[in-house]
Structures are given as structure tokens and as C-alpha cells.
Length: 428
Image (cartoon, rainbow, N blue to C red; front, side):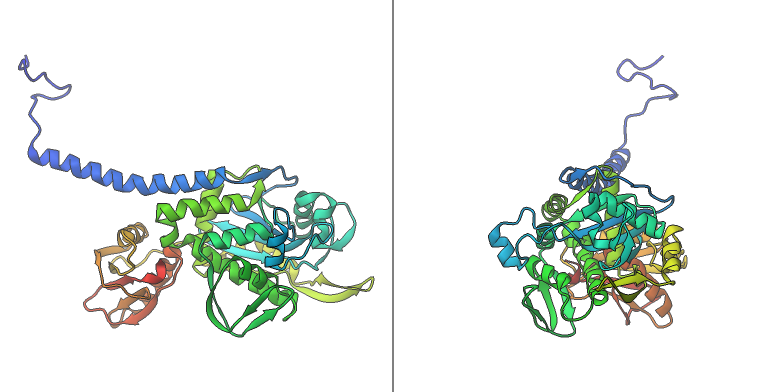
């Protein structure tokens, strides 16, 4: 029989009132659950907001490869949506006839491992309709679906998704993240591209960034492709930076602006957006393997074009089977760190909660966390190590780059047997 005031609980021999310690443990458990679930819910909301903002179109010919995700990024010379004033400001000129692709970039991902393959716009190919012409004219024969089929029959690489962006969308994305910092080894000036940039480090807004990736007169198209690849990595770093993505009032508007700036195939949803976000983090870490289709210059019908050289087949093959990702930096924790490698994480970034989130990611990767705390503000993220632990410090720096998109400096100076990761304001 049970006490009238306290009915027996199923499976209990005797009901006991909750103790103060039990109540405290339950409160702690609830707090822990909230701390774990909130970042997951926020990350999910970013993917949902981004996916909801996208314009989608049906694209023929999509047929991805198993084990990897291949996304074709197409930058067109479309002026659609730009006013006459904006065209003048961006130095894009008026309508230039049939649409052509200004940038053709295949991004392959698996987790945060990323490889990029650029197709020169003057690459001479057989288009989807059987005619031969430069690859950047394929969209004129049947829209982006023709470009997809042309690339597939040229390289044998399957494509899962397509992301398209015109001049106006590109400017919108760059401005949404507050500009992109680049360090130029020499000044660049081109009236046709609308830029006059001094040498040195500077933040490029949308208009200057568009001119930077478009400029052709200062060198050749292959150097232009290299600039585009480098700029995309820098842009990914801005998008994936903790100061953008971990702050709701910056992360949500940024993701929404990016969604509104691009057009994708109908298969892109929140799950794909989340995968692309992980890939962006890997791209921002600087570990992406970038390559351009090997070519040789020739003349056909009086026009200067590029033909794929014999080495191109080896490049195509590495993307077909995903082996190219073995040349790219893989995600954090790809090889287990030493079990006795202890890491102290200190927050000098002024981004609240960043040390805890970073330490959680490193702990998941196999590191033993020796402590988490605050530090005076520092301008550069760094790993400090005791004498004899340089190799472990370099490994930690690589893993931090995969988590935060910025590789810390590595320097000797920590006491004891632990590595010290000090997060800096360069993560803002």
C-alpha cells in the first residue's frame, strides 16, 4: 500500500521526494540541452532562410556522382535587374547580345574537403546540340541545361546542382558580407572594368569586386581565372566567419541576401544549403585544391581559342572518381590527434561564446580541452606551444582553420604541456 499523499511510482519500491541535489542536476541538464540545441536550431534556421530566398528553375541533364557533391557555379554577363544608373556605376555597359557565361567553375565537396575546377570561357568544345564553339556560348543553345550537358559530355563529370549569379547578384553578395579584404601585390587599373585599385591590403565592395574578377586586359584569361578562384575563397571566408554566421542579426540577413542573389536548380533545399555551408568553411580554410582545365592556344576560323590538352583527361578523371579531394584539406579531425594533446582555448576575439563553441568542435575532433576562458583582445588568432610541441601546434592550427576559416599563427611561448589557442579579432 502507498501513502495517500504520495502514490507509488511504477517500478519504485518506495517513493522519495526529490532532493535538492537532484533538482540541481536536472536544472543543469536542462541548461546543457538548451546550449546544445540552440546552435543546432540556429544553424537549421540559416539553411531554411537561405533556401526560402532562392529563385529556382528546372535544369536538364543533372546527374551527380556517388559519394561527392558537384555544384556548377555559373557567373553570367547578364545585366538583368540592373538599372541604367547601376550599369553605369558598375561599368557593365548595355545589353551585349545573347547571354554568355563569364565564369564556369565546378566545385566538388565531401564534408569540408573542397576542390575547384575552372573551365576557361574560350575553351573550344562540342556543345549539347552537336555544334562546336567556345564553352561560354553553350547557354545560347538551350540555357544552363545545355551548359551542364556540354560539360558532362566534355569531361564525363556528373553534376548535382547549379548555382547561377549575374552581375547584380554578385555585387549584392559581396556587399551583404560587408566587402572582401584582398591584398594586391601591384596596382590594377582598367577603365573598361571600372576599377583603379592601389597595391596593398584593402576591402573591396561589390562594385570594385566585380571589376576585379572581370578585368582581362592586364594579363590573360588563365590569370583572370586564378583571381576568380582566390576571390571566391576570400568571399567564402567572409561568409563563413564566426562574426557573420554566429551572430543572428548578421547571419540571417546575409544568408537571405545570398539566397536572393542567386538562381539554382529546383533540387536545392535546406539540406543542400547546409552542405554548401560546410563546403564554404572548407574553402575558406585555404585547403581547397584548385585547378584549371589544361589547354593549348590555337586559332579556329580566325578566332583565338583554347583546346583541352592531353593532360586534361587526368584532371577530369580525378574529379569523376573524387580522388582530387585527397589533394584538398579535409575536415577537422580527419586524422586523430594525440590523445595526450591538451588545448586551452582563450577568447580574445570580442565574439561572445566563440571560445566555448570552438572548444566543443575541437573536443569532438578528439582533442582534450584543458580549459576555456577569456583573454585580452588580440588582433591575430594564434596557437602558442611549449618547446617540443611544434608539430602538434601546426596540426591544431590546421584543424582550427577547418572550424573557423582562418589559420592561426603558430609560435612558441606557452608554459607547461598544453597548447594555448587564443582567438583574435581577425575572426570578426
